[in-house]
Length: 204
Image (tube, rainbow, N blue to C red; front, top):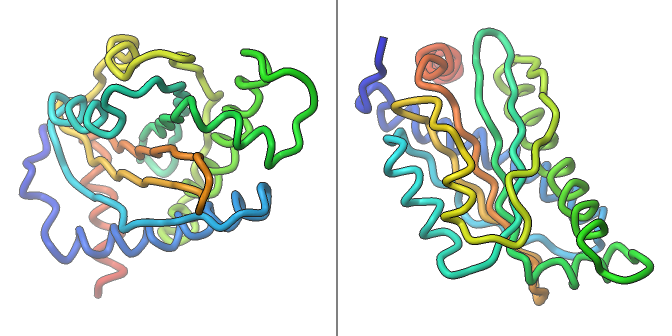
């Protein structure tokens, strides 16, 4: 059964946003403790969109910017989704310095930095949402979608799984440092109804 875009009403959208605010705050705290720098957090964007719109949103997020990307699937209580981290390549030097990585900043070290950052942000955010909704999410193995490439290359490497997606976009930056990444949480269209049931329970 296809999900109509109208299925997420304004109250539910506000509740999603509040849940994600809490979860992204936990993720930012983990990252701040890791690197010893203040993490700037804007308001997350929550929307139910078509895959074509998702691709456009990803392209706009990092237009004309070389990025590295990692994705990780998750599932729990019949709710499935995917976390996608787009990491601006110019962030690697600052992040390596903050984490006191030794040696030359080669592709292998950048891969380690990318995986470490993805592990912190994705796990903290997914677990934070799961705790609030009383869902235990099992997380799959992270997959590198690309290193030092354009967003179009990342989009071409993905296989569109869903016609409509509940997309939550979270932008992280470190104050006064060139560290910039976007975390996209994508929930399958079949999962939206089950998510809304739990959201409605919180709203009652």
